Every structure is written in structure tokens, then in C-alpha cells.
Amino acid sequence: MNQDELISAMAICHVEFIITHPFREGNGRLCRLLNTVMALQADMPVLDFGYIEENKPEYIAAIHAGHDQNYEPMKFIFSELLSRSLREYDRI
View 1 (tube, rainbow, N blue to C red):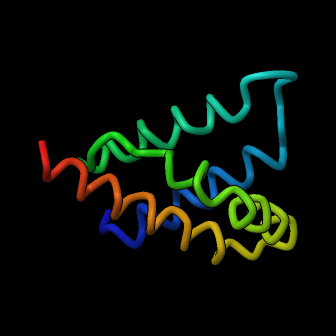
View 2: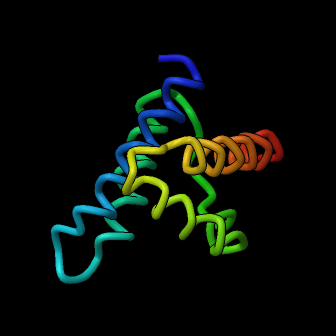
């Protein structure tokens, strides 16, 4: 899986899981864990989800776009998130 395919898979899984919201609590934490496992399986670093916290309005808008199966906003977020994580990993 190349980086673009990984970003797409993580974004779609994240949006669909958040929209489905299967549990009363912990959906966001489980989503972040799932995305981290996906990244690690693709030989990428642990993800830095601080990007989402710093860009909360865009993140919420990306979830809303996912209701119409428009995953591009979330793909952008995960592209930025992964880039940030890779930069941090390189510093270690």
C-alpha cells in the first residue's frame, strides 16, 4: 500500500466509524487506535493526532462531508496528519 492508498483507507475508515458511532463512549479513541494500527502496519510512525485538535472546525466539517461519502476533506486532514507524524519521526 502506498502512502496515498493508506491516507484514503484511514480517512474512509475514520469517517465511517465516527458516523456509525457503535459505542456509547470511546468511539474517537478507538478510531485513533485503529488508524494508528493501520499506519504501523504500513511501516509508518505512530500518528500525531494533535493536528486534529488544532484544526477541530475542519475536522468536524470533514465528518459532515463524509455523510455524503465525500472523503476528500478527511483525506486532506490525514495527509497533513501523516506528514506531521513523519516529520516528528524523523526528529527522533
